[in-house]
Length: 224
Image (tube, rainbow, N blue to C red; front, side, top):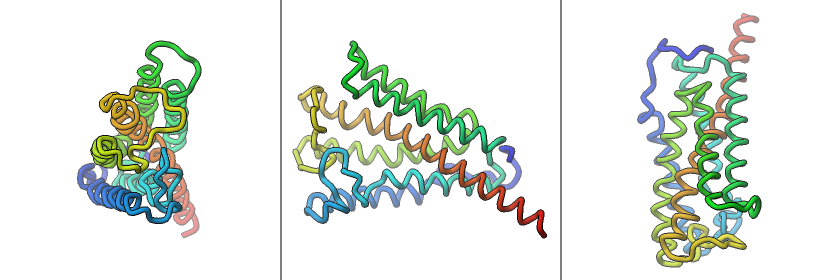
């Protein structure tokens, strides 16, 4: 499954446009649901979101598969789906190692959050090695999804809305000024961790889906 120019090359902007709009709609629905105190199963206002059903985290998996299949169908698949899966797993592990470094209680050392964020960024870059066009699409989608959330969090923290966009996590010991808090729980996590998470998980699910689809086509050709 070589990444090639064969077929019509897909524009990343066009590829992510509808997923980005859907994601924005879900983010706004989530905000309204929390402000209106709708079901906590669907709209959990606790710190981190409490794995609420209505949320955009799950969309990284879905759109990772969507992007991968569209790109592979246009002749822009990876040279090796096995390597694509492997590098996605490696990136995912690095992202969560970065989370542990940045936000875990130990090890404690000066600048640990910066080091952790750098490790997350490196993890997010790893999938570019094996399937760069998919990683680019997921990075673009990740920023399109997370910049609006960062904007919502700015106003939520400013206004103490009582949503998962502004509630401090348990045991929070970071800055308490508005800008310090916004950087610590809003801007940096959204634009570093969540984008890296989107790239790595989307690449993993997308690469697996692409491998399954490719094998299905190969089996169909073999029996036809």
